[in-house]
Image (cartoon, rainbow, N blue to C red; front, side):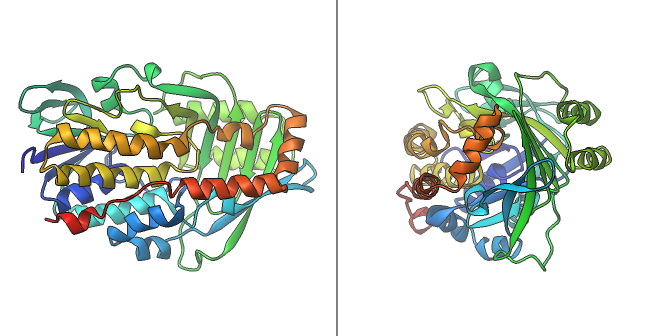
Amino acid sequence: MRNQSVLISGASVAGPALAYWLDRYGFEVTVVERAPELRPGGQAVDFKGATHQTVVERMGIWAEVQQRSTGTTDIVFVDEQGERIGLMSGDFTGGDVEILRGDLAEIMYRRTSGSCEYVFGDSISALTETADGVLVEFERGEPRTFDLVFGADGIHSRVRRLAFGPESEFVEHLGYYYCVVGASPWTEQISRRERQIAYGLNAPGLLAVDGGAKAQQMYVFATPEIEFDRTDIAAQRRIVSEKFAGLGWEVPRMLAEAAECEDFYLDSLSQVRMRETGYTTGRIALVGDSAYGNTLGGFGTGLAVVGAYVVAGELALADGDHTVAFERYTEIMRRYAKIAKNTSAGRFFAPRTGRGIKFRNWFLGSRMFALMTRFGDKAANDIDLKDYPALTTK
């Protein structure tokens, strides 16, 4: 097989999933992650429908994912007096099974760490493609050459920036930001069949959610793009506190708790829009949110594991010939990834007007909403999966 050595940037979801399949097919896999270790916690992510389940089952981790499930969370919308005014079912906001992002990453890491090389606390600083491979320079480690490089490093992908161009050319800000505070810990007492309740307060362009399985707190707010240091958590806390200052109900208590919580994450709601050339260039390919991300769009984790399955399987079928495999990967995933396009969770979670909030609450109980939910379920399965493991294995 040609193209034996591969480098994957990112050890969250797409990276370890891709490492699993590439290792299975006989590739020599290195994963580099800028964090000093696996990042625990994080918000709950989900799998929806038979396609997602099939891929996770073929990885041999479906039972463990179910065991570590957080349970389904309904969001009850209330007014400032705490009176119920609407309900968003967890069947819409979640999937068939939900799990904390950190727990999912840890499950896949354990499946791959014995046979794949993981390098924590480092990141790619430069990529130079040659006729025979890709020369990779790192922020800390010595330069190395790999046959193929994969960017599985999220919506703000460094690999995409280095190989394709500036983030501004590929990532569209959707007019909102979200913040997750204190991922709810998994316990054996939480069954995947249990329904939990979170409570949310809206004001025009704002949503504050308290409790539930997804996180201890979540905030969504409308705003133009904000410049902030992603490593400066204190500055991020100030942004959220200023946006939600003056709201009643439980918000003052929530903000006080958020100020003390170490697990605090703020980012934009954005959508990746790759050019017609697709998700690859030469010997470099993007997988997961770096290629087809849409923050809080509802399909990100499923797209990540399916995309990893497809690109690895196509490489195996093509005997490592990336020119053939990458073209097939782009063709398959461009069609499937349409499920993440043209959706904006921000407008749904935090309508910008009082009238918009009232309409959203009405819509949640309507027949049209039920039809929209069924359409999303159908779209999650709109792909003809090849049985790659049956065709070639390590």
